Length: 68
Image (tube, rainbow, N blue to C red; front, side, top):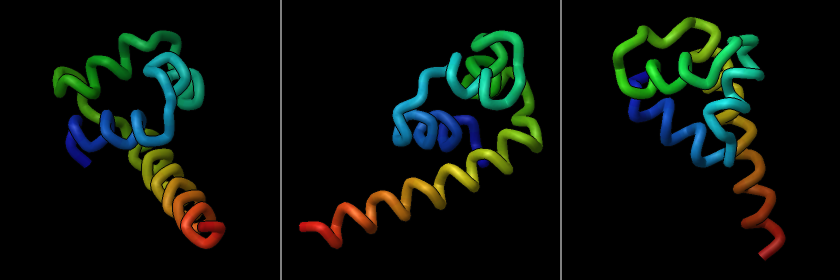
């Protein structure tokens, strides 16, 4: 996952950097900001979380389409 993909996914689910940092157990949103800018490596936990959130997002989108 690239830094841009991490940012795009976070925005798709409507989370702030602080919310993602909290979900990952990080002490500061600045850590997420550095990951999204590419100045800090993306942690394995972020990759796991991002994949899970992507699945949840896809399921939500699918459910919304079924209601239409």
